[in-house]
Length: 114
Image (cartoon, rainbow, N blue to C red):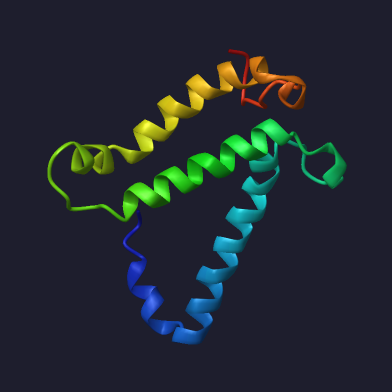
């Protein structure tokens, strides 16, 4: 933004690696509560099972489609838009999962009112 990227050259590689790893951990920890469908600092007993299951399934979907990157045909097209596909599948399943029985009686945690 301000052309200060050259300052990275003055930081040692181990310090830079630690900084990048720490920022990655902060991002993961910040998103973990949303992944589990609970509030930050809440106990594990307050985990929303439907939200946790849906989140894990969508992560697996994106990672699995990423393995087929560079293929041609319909699978290659799906791999190109794997994040968009995960959003569409997640949106549809978030609306359908509560109707599949008592285990999903609690609605899927979403960011806002749908």
